[in-house]
Image 1 (cartoon, helix red, strand yellow):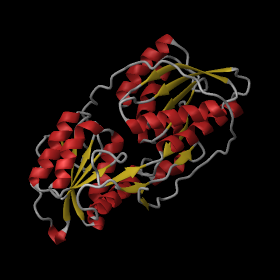
Image 2 (cartoon, rainbow, N blue to C red; image 1 turned 180 degrees about the vertical axis):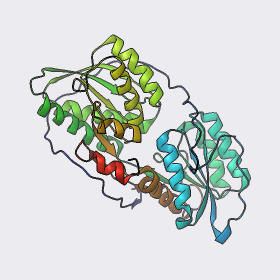
Image 3 (cartoon, one colour; image 1 turned 60 degrees about the vertical axis):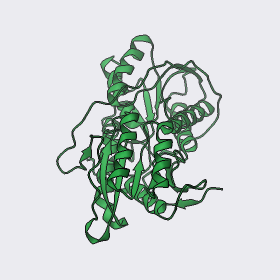
Length: 358
């Protein structure tokens, strides 16, 4: 039994109550490899993201703060916000944090971990580009007295990890999307569905499965999965979406991430799809997906694990503190959990204000 450290998050407004029922549909996945995300320079005042493989020396920080590294897999908007939040709040948890990203390059991330070990960092928190690639280097780090945190499940010899109940959380969003269809399109006999998944990460696979199951179990209409795509970011959501709309109509789009869904919805708009002709729902709200919901562009439901720069950053720092309590390799890493809530059009303005996105 894994130990659980429950972290209370600020409640995020949840809305629209709805109901449940249905059956699953299997469809062949369209294999679309995820390409590297386009580089986006951090805005002034944001957490500076180190892209070189070599980490700066971890000198002793003022006030006895512990030197820590925060390594993200991507430089997307959400990860930049979380990185900034971790940097801003680090001192409250006893850390001084240096951030880096690998831009979805697993080999580069391994080199960054090696560099952090050599530079003398005491804690390394990692959002993995590839679980397997990190296993050996993180085992070596722990054996050398470095504390390792996984920001995505109990993997690669981490001593603590951040987790959401990916399947259950996304299942809840799928249920709500099915209820939305039942309420707003009761006359539809068949729903053509596109699933925006990401088949290269276990957590994302669980998230997509939960969302699809929740929807098909709830939707009264027959569900036909007409396309499954795996965009890694907003740009790929747009590019892959263009191909989808050239090939088929889509009634409902379900996605694992707000950014990716925003790109897909941009493709829908370019293809001439009317805003009331497709509904979209996605986990992991982002600024651009929230703005689309505010503008009435396709997105009706978003899942949130809290503000990236405040709530989620705090959870990651709690996990870093928890890892400091574990010495050496362990089969029982500490689990730090955040909860989910669901946002619809009636609550989006407040959420955008709470997150500082308005």
